[in-house]
Every structure is written in C-alpha cells, then in structure tokens.
Image (cartoon, rainbow, N blue to C red; front, top):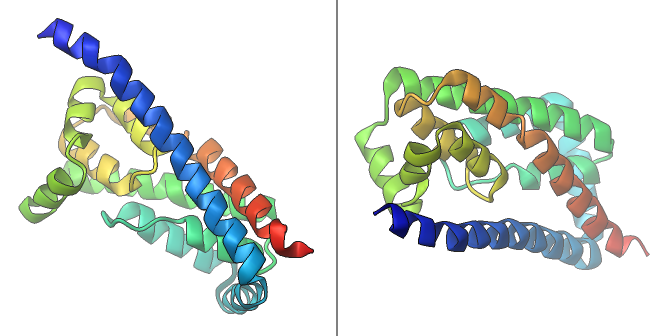
Amino acid sequence: MNAEIMTQEPATSVLNVWKFALGFAVIFALAAAAGLFFREPIYQFGSLVVGQYGLLGLAVAVLLVDALPTPLSYVPFMALALAGGLTFAEVLVVSSLASYTAGCLGYGMGRMVGMPERLERWIHHRYPRVQALLDQYGGWGVAAIAVLPLPLAVGTWSAGSLKVHVRQVAIALLLRVPKTAIYLVVIERGLSLGAG
C-alpha cells in the first residue's frame, strides 16, 4: 500500500502544478479578452461598483465567497476593484485580509458545526480528493488547497471538521497572500492589453 501511494504521489504533484498553472492561464485569458473586447463596460461597471461599495464592499464580497462553501471565486471582485480605480496595493491588502479571515471563519465553522451531511456529499462529489488530501497531509493539505484553483471554504470547512491543528491552518492560509498577488498581476496585465 505504501508503494502504491509512493507511485501515485509524483503524478498527483505534477497534476496539481498543471492545475495551478492552468488556473492562472485561464484567468489571464479571461482578463485579456475582457481588456480587449469589453474594456469600457468593465471599467464603467467597476467604477460604479467601487463608487457605491468601495473597499468595504470588496472585503465583504471576498469574505463571503471564501468563507462559504460555493464554487465561486474572489477573482471577479478583484478585477472589478482594479478596473474601478482601486490601487493594486489596496486590492491586495483588502482581498488578502478578507480571504485569510474567511479561511479562519470557515475553519471555525467546520470545527464547531462539523460537516453538514448535504455539504459533505457535495464536496465529495465535486472535490473527491479534498478529504484524502487533508487526512494524509493535514496543514500541508490546507496549504495546497489555499494555492490551487479550489474554493477555499471547501478546504477550511473540511479541515475544521477533521480537526486539523489550528496553527497549521493559520500558517497555511498565509499562502493566500502570494496567490492573491499573483492573481492581481495576471488580472492587471490581462486588462492592460486593451489599454491601447
């Protein structure tokens, strides 16, 4: 059995690297397409959203998306914030803090409430390897989920219900900061393709 895990490990690691790279490539392609073909409407809508909700709206949107187990991503909110005139630094700090806080909340909910049966079925159906990843690697599994193109709440709720050590989760969630920075660079570069 141990040999079986050993032989599958490199293939899984390579697959995860490809998923990671593919996730960023897709975001760049979408941001580039948006910058080239929909620049004016996106920037107008971004300005409207930022004018109406500002940094607090960005924080709440990222917090909700990353704290609740949904297949949604915080990337579109960051793109709108950049298009709406917020600075790179503002979006990075607010999104990173909100995402980190959401991860802690998700972990706490999973730890206190456990995994509701319906949610557990959805996670096992949609993301079948998450529990095995957390069972086998604990905090390192949370770290992988934090950087892969997976919903953060899926990993944090699962980690809480599996009682992964809180310190490991807190440290693993710090990886959201560089992931957020990379996403923002990719979004900014993609949107700038339509700048002329």
